[in-house]
Image 1 (cartoon, rainbow, N blue to C red):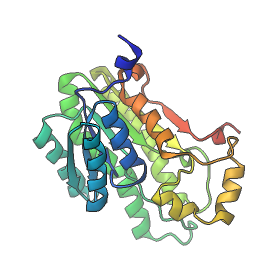
Image 2 (image 1 turned 180 degrees about the horizontal axis):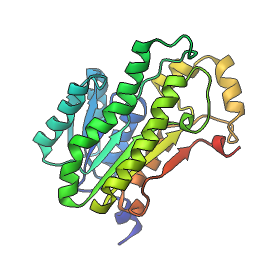
Image 3 (image 1 turned 30 degrees about the vertical axis):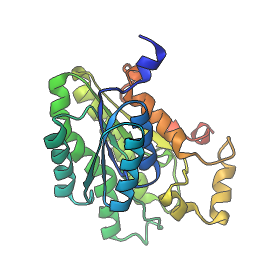
Image 4 (image 1 turned 45 degrees about the vertical axis):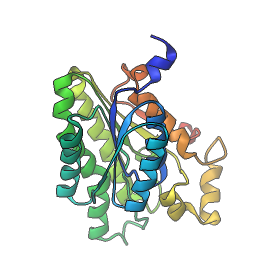
Length: 255
């Protein structure tokens, strides 16, 4: 099998959450360029239309599903709708994420619960719904988008760090339970990436500057750099990589 064939996704069906902006929109384009058809899941209709246009421009099919992943029933419905439409999903990328940066003494219970629901509960619900079909076909890929904050402390990110640490742990249990069915489950942990959420949290140069100074590469990540790692983890080329946390952080966690 050639290099191109090992990294190709022709004939695969991928579901991407948080598809209406940032890494999600870019990832829909990248996966479709590699040959995959894409189910794009998000709340924002305009953003979903942009994701769909990117997939179709690469000759792929795109099914858009509007869902609020903070609601457990909506997360399950989105996954079930994808299965009803396409029969099976070969690749699940749990990309949707939220952050409400506050000192822990100021964080509200409602904010805490919202962050955990989107960042941690929704990936479990999506996987729980989609995995039986992957098990039946003895093949599947799950990539959970985590964060460098899963490994290092960051002020005003207590709830966010808890959700991403939890996601890394959940991914390892996914591996333990599903590896025997030829399902690979990994996390990708980016540093600051200038998505709309990244801009919201790090848009102030006075705040961003000290963070960039801690990144050996001297800059933030680009969305496509994160997406290319996800693409690798979705391809046959990564079939022996399972239960790993892959940091796309310019060396931040190496220090």
